[in-house]
Length: 282
Image 1: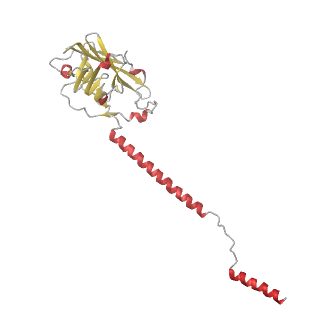
Image 2 (image 1 turned 180 degrees about the vertical axis):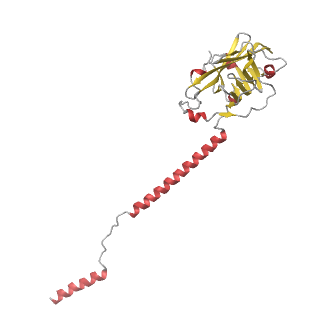
Image 3 (image 1 turned 45 degrees about the horizontal axis):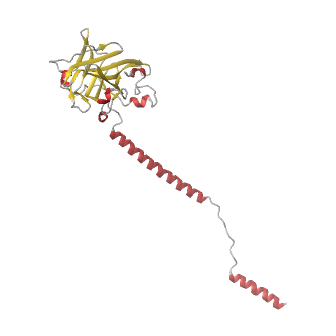
């Protein structure tokens, strides 16, 4: 079952007001005007009517089936001497499919990888965005493993770049098996230094790319947490100072209570002698 990521707006589109606020989430993406790092191979081009319609490159493309050894398909995919078969790839205004046929790879027969992409116009962003919907591995000619792609999208006028697009959690897990019984649970696929452009390809070179690097890096998150703790300590200190000032203010306005003083002993004695003398004179 293929996942149609174009059915709903990508959650981090600028201007898209989703559950978490599109403006805040939109800061997670960066549009870079400088070209990406050099790779040992030229981009793979899918041609239509003599013009490129899909550009794709990756520093390393590897797949792993269960406990077998890792299969490196980089040279097969990007070699200019023996180019990979891309027959079956599709280019249209709102759909694109990159199909790479590798043939027999060790014990696997008829290995191919398919990347399915779509483009859609979003009124909230005021522009068209394309997304990578699914990545599929076909093997033994009839069996197929499907991975749904998440957070792999960019403006249709630019390319998409990410250091790792992989099904492995240590690389972010942007590719996930479509369903639990799917054979994809037995596979792992990793694209290193991944870059692709499937729409508005004007030449044989990539347009400026949107990078998948997040704004909230671990260092930034630690700084934010530390700042939050310091703010809490400062707020508590201010609260205590205000509380102490309030206590002092209440003490100044308390009513002074006076207690009557008892008569001094000398006065009492003199008064007693006076009364006694009066009685004697009488």
